[in-house]
Amino acid sequence: MPYRPKQHQIASQAVTAVSSVWANAGAAVEEIKQDYGEDLLVQPCLENVMDNVRIWVQVKGIKNVLTNTKVVGKTAIKIRADLALRWARSADTLVLALWDVTNHVGWYSIPSLIDLGHEELARKGRETISIQIDFQNEFNDTSANLIIWDARINHLADFVRNYRWLGQEDGQFSRETAVW
Image (cartoon, rainbow, N blue to C red; front, side, top):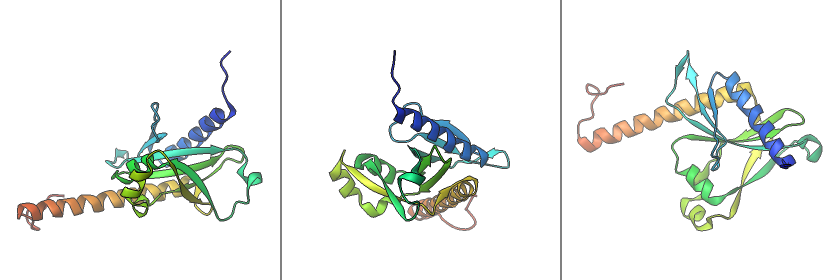
């Protein structure tokens, strides 16, 4: 008979729980079947209209973190440097979620990978790096909605910045020609 390790069971439970939080926030959630570092693709919607914003989520499951550690301060999640480099090069929002399957509670981080440096991440290749998750950043319906709005704002800021850059390149940017 095939054997399913306990860690695979914990991972599945964590992905399901985190998906549920995003769904409660009104987002469409797709589990990535060919997992190359992201477990979920979250597509927010506003007033039943799908956004053009994408949020990628890497889920890490743990069992009974409340008895394994004090839930104060931070914990570190190890990921491969080449994966972090791919995330750092993406315009989409990346969320790293840690979910305790025993206590039905989670925490999140939106890693600022630019600070790590593209050259350093590229040099490390398949070595692991640590990304911090602060236990004050609880992942729940409220924080999921805040993450969605933050992703929308960042996406719009990038759009405006690129639009202005294109207009400056063409020498045609003006308020009269701006199309929103």
